[in-house]
Image 1 (cartoon, rainbow, N blue to C red):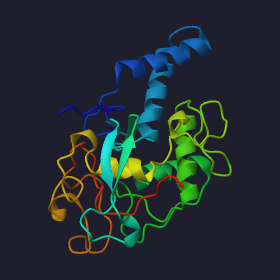
Image 2: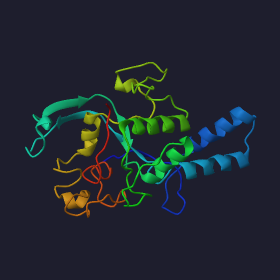
Image 3: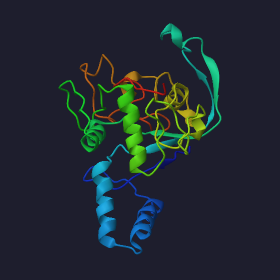
Image 4: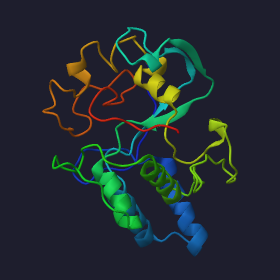
Length: 246
């Protein structure tokens, strides 16, 4: 069973994460382009910047394209989730291994001067961020894109953009960070190319994979505490509602 992930760097006491050879070379190339030579102090400074800007949850999982039955196959969801129908994703894409956390989003707010969202008194840190709008979410996506030198995925009106900044309706032309489409999210939640057909994202037992009314004390919980699904993605069932492409 193949799982592909891209990692950032070892993290300030919170477990190891690989910083790939290609990533280190990218930093070095940028320094050489700007300064004409390798500057070890500048390299360490930029490495430290990524360590304090990103977080343990800045991990992306690759989902390979494929076909699946989208919608309510059981009959226990809202009417708009029926009938189930075949959807084919003809491309591969990347999706976050964890939900965006308060730690990540608060860093974005501090860097851009945005108001930090209320945590309902439940705590921040590695809990999934809540009380943000769709516009807040795409602002965060664009900020991530800018941090990594990629073209923004959205314009000021919320339209999707291609790598050249032109409005597009072709999701495959978007190169920056963006929200997943409904089909992309559901396919990933079902386990994508590794699916085993579970009722929930990774198990037939919701308590194994998700926080819900019966086990959560009616509050969010830090990401990644439950079992992941077949792709190693966490909290796809329960914990918080999630935004997608408009």
